[in-house]
Image (cartoon, rainbow, N blue to C red; front, top):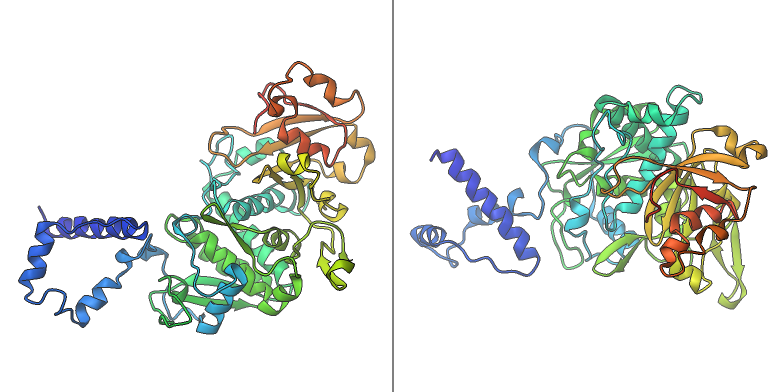
Length: 446
């Protein structure tokens, strides 16, 4: 066996040991490793500086970043400061000691196969990063259908005909648009990973072997941001790149901490919610990606709450490009569904990020006239992408708001609530009340 092959296998073993160790599982050393340790003549007591350096190598870090996704340290960015890293932790987790888990670290922006029925779509994760991935998905659809060449020209077929280069461009432009909107059209910050580490662990900060290696690139012109992001788009769409976290960090730094704290209110003290062993994005993160403001609520404007000493709840102040619909069966049964305001329900483009039973998906149309001509809302076509890996083609829905009431169609299926009242349909009816929905041959699902 060649020496390089042996070293590669040892490196792989170290990677798996780190993964199991992070889950609280012990992996014993092989006899060969123990012999090597003894042969070095010192055991644990003789650990020197070189062994300490080796223990900090990337392959000992859970899901380490591949070398080809690490940028040179002299590219012109500003090394992250400890103060900035700590503030990122506070705004995300509420403290400086929580760190992202393996699920978050492995998440990135991965397209389905080019030139396929879902060539325009991202493979969304099942867990906490899904809201971010699907919000980006909605912006990708906006770009491909409506803004690619400055006017409406797209169709569902055109979405299926895009290749790898078009996928890269769609992602780069969409990330650029979101960051620029978040920076109020004046500035944006992009985070990338370098080889160097700029922060050491201390009693008030726990390192994650990732955040400490960031460099921050600030842009005052949108065109320069898009050009730079396009040149480094592989840092967001390659396996092992921590792409979703990189984008989330960039999003928060583009908004600035001062504005973020002003956006939030007494109901939301930080942006991620810990539930069932994972961190998920709160509504404020979703609204930040849709409107540029991290407001915690979906109603129009701000509301004063007398019971809370006249404190304000912050809602949505502007009509968004991409809309938002919300329906969760448990919340509906308890009469706790949030009332999404018209700023989100009626966006500038016929695209809606949907929160359906706590899982994010995208609903969209291909005709701008749907939002500006009320006669178009009698019978019209919508398309649905769930983000789930089991979906193999875009679902085509025909919406009829005038012919007959929808409930009569489901009297036969009185057992399963999902069959009687499919969640996708119930979500659509929060926008078009009473609409009948034809799935055009697809078995209703969620």
